Image (cartoon, rainbow, N blue to C red):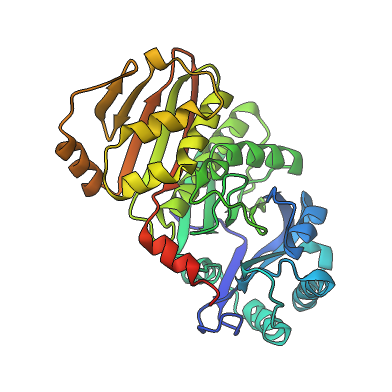
Length: 394
């Protein structure tokens, strides 16, 4: 499929992570270009988020520096100064202005960055940039924290005037909540598009993807999605048809990246898709989907392959949405277990086996006769999640 042209990537280990794993990534454009972002809704936010919000949207982007292993959040003035220093050092080595450099950080909250290692790492990473798939893959590894592995996506979208390439990388496995979901993601494309249209497309794509995932509902301090379009293809996204095709492609890429996050939820044994049908409108369907996804009882039932449909139906009932119980029906992995407000005679062992045997679990809940629909993705809740997060910093 091939990566979009005009970009360079790399990932190195510079000592931010005690493990010695890759912990510093660079994504850069060979020419100044468009960059737009969507950021965490948490009031407590990292220095990098404040920095990026002041700079995006922009038409002058040159580079994105990402460190993992340290969130640089809740670190006061020193954290703000350290973030500024990262941009200053990168700008110097790239021979650009500081306001052309974006910064992302992810990792443990409340610890100061080891700036001597970070500074030397930035210089090394910039010197080792390249446009190969290996360079891209190293960058996708360097942004990870508790993830089991990298999360990437690539696609080509064909419009009237030619083909446009899109590639993306993301990280996230825990502290995942549905308000810009706790994660980092970077989308790059060789499309030519202005900042206003790019920002609108990204905002809508986020609502259908990263804002529809959760692991335990905890919105982080460092959530960010950056989309960078450098125009290397020479194909301008300006007509209505081109904008529609491009937005569909960006949205699908975001969905594919987003789904990989709860699929990699810390200790997760199931990726759960929740489809809500029949709501009065999409907003009410979304409210029900989020409520079901947030239920610890629903999540643990899926962990144990327990077809306990009562937990799902009752969660929908306290979501605060309009609901016609007499018209409520539920399917688990295709098995009808509740219909028109009444239980259905089921083979519990068969349904349980279906839940146990499949990594992906589908919950299809109809709550009335309306046209409202919503989809949400989450992970189940396992003993491994509790163990991992109880020992995370100790």
